[in-house]
Amino acid sequence: MKPIFGRGPSLQLRLFLAVIISIAAIVADSRFGVFTHVRVYLSSLVSPLQYMANAPGTLLDTMSTQVQTRADLIEQTKLQEQQLFTLRSRLLKMDHLEHENQRLRELLGSPVHKESRKMVAELLSVDSDPFSHQVLINKGALNGVYNGQAVITDQGVIGQVLHVGSTTSRVLLITDSSHGIPVRVLRNDLRAIASGSGELDTLELRNLPRNTDIQVGDLLVTSGLGGRFPEGYPVATVTRSEYVEGKPFAQVEAKPLVELDRLRYLLLLWTDKNPEVHDEVGEAAAPAASAAGATR
Image 1 (cartoon, rainbow, N blue to C red):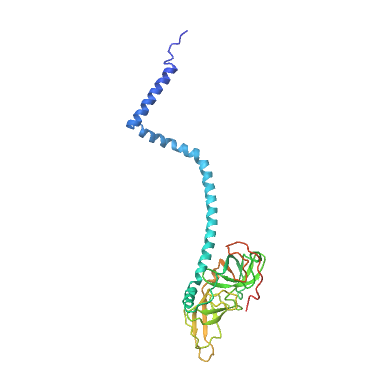
Image 2 (spheres, helix red, strand yellow):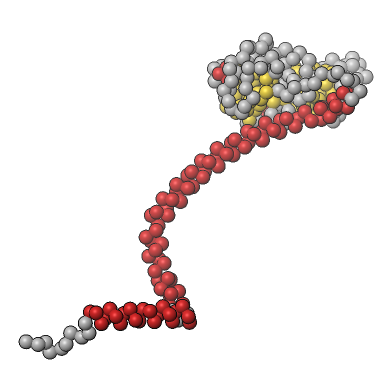
């Protein structure tokens, strides 16, 4: 029994017609751009589906990249801060070396000062006693820290190591009333002792004769006497120089170059007496021998 309606063209004929139409559409689009606008509309309709399909993978990739990038940036920033901290500290001796080079042209055989070894340390806590100016740092005997070791920042001298633990150390600031540091005036090489006043922004130069040539604005640098602090590092700027009638000595005060209430990173210095310590930021060094006494 035959169906009422015929089946239509055969599959082979349908396939042939589809191929012919496809080839014609391809030629027409490549030559005349017939379907350009159609593709735009189709892409607009399909794009939300593509975003939805790619969303899980994109989200995971983005999260992974952000986490990795943030960790890398934090590590790189910390390393660069330490490197910049170390490099800027080396500039502290620039003025001193310029003045010294002028004298060396006249005085052959003058000793050449070697660059001190350094290690970056981070502030852990500040002493809560208002009458004691001390801070705790995250380096100790395992890093080669020793009693009496000079401590600076990229701006100037801040003090010396008072007590050493295995992984931490206590630093006595130059403004502590029990601390004194040998200094000299950069302008005229006048030598003196800068003593702590008990105030974070004041040092005192005591027992200076009334006719001492010292002026407001003079820069005080370490003199190197005593061997505790290397020579030439900035300490303070003279803010007061008065001669009070009836007193045998001048009243001289100076302001530390470092803002001691805003410390974060510090630099530990090694002298030639401790050659076994490596000059690398953050690298653990062999324990060094303790120096005598941290205070005057």
